[in-house]
Amino acid sequence: MLLLLGWNLYAIGIVTVLFLTVCVLMVLTVLIQKPQGGGLSGAFGSGAGSGQTAFGTKTGDALTFFTIIVFVIYLIFAIVLNFAARPEALASANSTAETAPEKAADKSAAPANAPAGTPAPNTPAANTPPASTPPGATPAPATPTDKKPDAPGAAPSTTPTEPAPTTPANPAPQTPPATPPASPETAPATQTQYVQINSGYISMWEGGAFTLTRYVSMLNDDIDWDIVALPKGPVGRVTLATNDGWSIWNGTKAPDATWELLKFLQSDEWTDIATRTAGQQSARRSHQQKWLAGIKEANPKLANKNLKPFTEAIEQNYARPIEFWRKDVDSKKIFTDAYNKSVRDGDEEVAVSMRAAAEQINQLNKA
Image 1 (cartoon, rainbow, N blue to C red):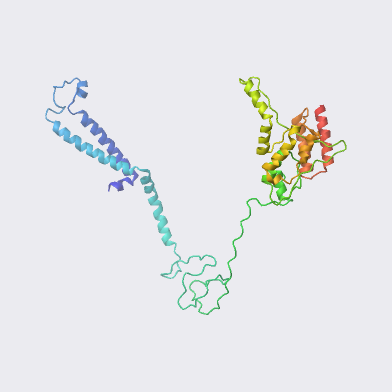
Image 2 (cartoon, rainbow, N blue to C red):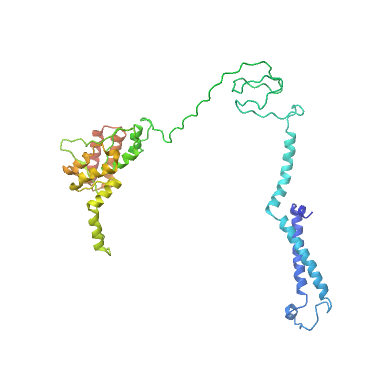
């Protein structure tokens, strides 16, 4: 009965009011008892010897017994409210009335024309053989068949059938690669040159010595590639040679130690470390043959590659540092767009695209 009270919202409200009444009654019962140090009676002017309680001198035992009864009632109401006011109890009270009609509807939804005692037919999985052979039927091999299943309620066929030849299972299809190579017609031009070469989208790419270690690790093993110097033009052969520079901050607190570090960064020891670790090529002419030997030793796949175009550009002095336009950001955008349009995408002749870009850049920087 106590639990049933918790399932009714009106009952919860009534019990709550009664609980509050018991709380007030218990507080008043405690206050009117004999004070131990003045208490409430002292606050109203009564001395400790003015009597046992407000109802006389011999009511202490009765009030004590009454206090115990009120406290027990208080605990009972508290326990009832604790169970009745739980969220899951309230939710079950609301859902009971909602699910009852649904269950009744489910019972009335059975097909009216189903034969008595016949369970509702389940849809069999495609090509799944029956779990057991019907009585009187000839067992057939458990092989897939294209014959449509008999209609429900029809008598099983008793015509013997010839065993079907055993068909070997088809092998599982091979899992395609995570990133299949795209065809040259559909490969996006925004992919890196390594992906474009692997997919056959492009056949060559202009790059520096710093890309050698990336070609080794990112090109497919079946790609046979090598390096050739840029063509020599009417004026001569020119190539771009960029390099990193070192400097000392004028506010450093350790100028001597910084200077020693910079000298180490120009030493053969550091240059060899940078060559073997990252493939970086020194700008020092005296170190070119050391770089050639070091990078091939650190990357065996480069042993048979033609790396002389990188060293000869410095040794023969036709490598040039990077140049900047006066309006460099806008000029680079014009050049990059022309380069991508002609060299990368092949949408325009290189000569036409570059002449137009040169004219635009010259006009931009003259303004």
